[in-house]
Image (cartoon, rainbow, N blue to C red; front, side, top):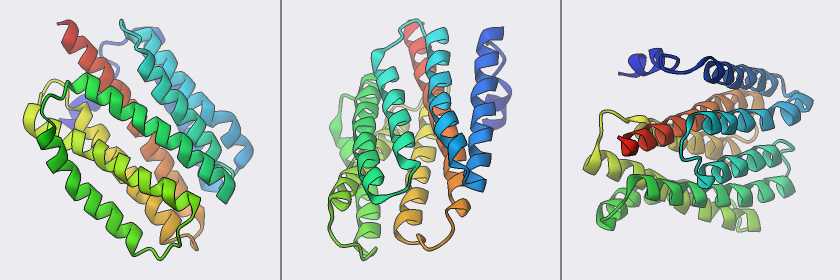
Length: 236
């Protein structure tokens, strides 16, 4: 199924859409290379371009052009920009922006998936809460403002995972499996960043940053595909 989805990326797009998609992944490739060599001038230039191309792609392909999509990607842009310096101050600000991004993403997903019963969502959220709070509890970190924001992040990413799992179990739609892929990639990305920051911080960032950037590129493209797929299903 995944191979078929990859082969169909360009199938129904116009020439302009194809150009934007190619540009999106080309910029992402430059970003991944810059992360590999820790060349920050390129990061400051190209990271905003990734979000910009995705917003342009959504503007071109969507009939609804929902403002929530643009807000979600905009706060993703701010988060990625603030994470570049990799200092405590900028990390704290980045986590705040990321929290706003997560809240907006959750609100948007709730709207798109049309959740009516909260019980499956709560049940699906609990395992993620146990997992991420266990990792945080054994990290040995002392409470700080950044630590508190990270607690909020654990709750938000757990809710996000719960939405994806509960929707997959209760309302699985073979025509639009992008939500499941987006959810799996999002949780994996958060896990990698968490492990890097709190368990393997002594290792060179070049080990994890290219992997995180690759996942980040895939996360937001699959998010876009889910949104567009859902809008088109609703139109039909």
